[in-house]
Every structure is written in structure tokens, then in C-alpha cells.
Image 1 (spheres, rainbow, N blue to C red):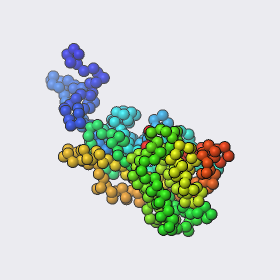
Image 2 (cartoon, rainbow, N blue to C red):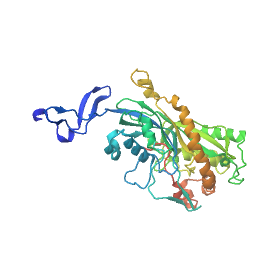
Image 3 (cartoon, rainbow, N blue to C red):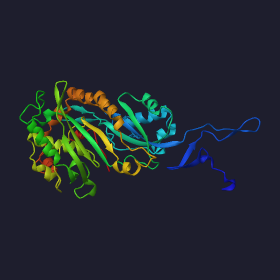
Length: 411
């Protein structure tokens, strides 16, 4: 190029120096200007962009998921509020807020897919389903200007039910979704969900016995290992390789009482999850324990035939933690990068769950009776035949129950 001139379109993006992650770019607002006297004026100083990860916690109620959907602005997402806070805090330029690719933004898990319709209305109950999946340990990666007091400034522009709890520097090519080895979710539900079908569907005096808890854990343990989960999601065929998923552990913890109602938390750790997978895994175990479905339906659900698997409500689902074991093994001890270990932030995570996530689940369950109303739909499922057979007999689950979409990742 004649005279080595830089085209005007690139004049504001000049390579500064070679960094560990590749070229580091300095962004300036204007090229150098002349002043009286003939000397060059120094351009405004801007910090270099760095690749970081943020540890996020949020209560998802009232949001249409984590992932931003610019084409549908009426559906508010967690990322809408996050990006707005990043711009207002001065971490990213304003134009990055309209095109997230410019900051190399990536999330570990979507924790809900934005709804494609304005509302999902249950024809059977006349009830509006509007619960978003929450997170206590979501991690996103992006490039930002590392300004002073960055966490405090970002949080000052976020609502109290969305918090950034930690920040770490990572390698220049880090991608939070691709580098994530596993995800841990928890599902909090009232224990009357496990009461036998002959009991009242919402018996608040019900308490989970040791024998029933043992049965629940025996059934949940069946999910461990690699299985074909095509019946636990939508639009996956039985022979699609992506329907095979590896579950490392799944179990139900000891129950506890909140506001006179007993709850329990189911935890599941897997390499990755498909849309609806966790809620369907929970839903099928509930149906078996209550006596609606035989235990043999578990084995059948991993076969090639189409099995009618109920999907539990989205209210109690929480992204608990994401894991980066391979990244930590390679870079965590090299002396240049921090391991992605959030041990120091565990106190903040626990406090956020106790203040925002658990109370929201308890109060919403009491006010909207999401679990009780879902339990009323279990008798219309046909567990002895295929889903096609259920539709033929008219025992079809209404599409409106497909409500709050997504738990975990989708392909």
C-alpha cells in the first residue's frame, strides 16, 4: 500500500505490541491531531482489551432466558441487562452492545431459550407459565477494558437479582462454552411431588420418608453413564449421535422445610445437556415414584422407540456450577494464568442463592402452584405405549405445556 497508509476504516484499530494471546489492540477515538506550533497532540489513551471470564448469578423469573435475542426485543433476557451494564460501566464500547461478536462474547450454558411466542398458556388449567431458569454459577467469556473497580461498576448498573461475583483473566482464544468440560444443575422441588398418586396432589403436610428418598436415588442413579436421550428432548432421532449424553452423577439431597413446605434438591452433573433434558429426567422419575409409570419405562426410553416422557416445570431448575478441568490442567499451573476455580467466591454464591433464588422458588411455588398443576397432567400421559400411541388415543400433552424452553445447552 503506497506510503504504508492505513485505510480510514482501520485507522482507529492499530496493533500496539505482541502479547501472550496474540496482537493486543489499542482503540483510539481519533487519529493524532495538529495543534498550533506544529507539534502532534497525543491521542486519547485507551486501555487494551483483555479476554476475561465473569462468574454470574441471577434469578431467572420474569426473563425469557439467558441468551440475548436482538430480533425480539419484547422478550427481556439476562444478557440484555448484562450488556447494558457493561456499556454503562465503560467496559466495552457502545457499538459492542449491538453486536456481541465484537467482544467475543460466549456463555457456558443458555439456561433457557427465548420464547418464540408472546406467552404459553395452559389450556388445561388456564394458567400462565412464565418461569426462567436461574443460575448460581454461570460463566461468560468476553473481551473488555479492564477499568478500575470493574466489578463494582458493572454491578452498580445491574438489578439486585443479577450479580457478577468474580472475574478472572484467561487465554486470548478462550471460549467459555467450548472449554467447559461439564455442567452441574440442581432442581429444587416440593417433596409432595413424590407422594403416591392416591394422595392429594398438593398435600403440604407430606414429608419424604427415608424409603422413598432411597427409591428416588436408586432411580436417579440409573441415568449415570452414557445413554441415548433422544426421548428427553425435541427434534432428535434415536440414531443421532448428538442424542447420546454422558451423565457423571445424579442424586437427591436430604429434604428441608421452607415456610412450612418441604423441599428437596436434585443435583445432576453431565458433560452437556440438551433442551428440556434435565426437566424430562426429573419428570420421568416423579412419574415412576408416584405410580403412574413402571420402572421399565426408563430402559425403554433409551431405546429406539418413541416414549412419552413428561417434562417437569422449569421453576426449580438452577445452573449450579460449570467445570473447566482440562483448561485448568493445561493453563492453571503455568504461572501466567489463574485456574478457573471459584472456591473463594463460594460464600457469595451461597448467599445469593439464599437471598434471591431459593426464596423466589418457594414463593412462586406457593403463589402459582406450578408443581401441583403439572402433577395434574401426569394421568394424561401414556407410559405403556409410544408417544405416537398416546396421541392416537387423545392423551396428548398440550403444546402449551412446552412453556419455558431449555435447560442447559443445545446443539
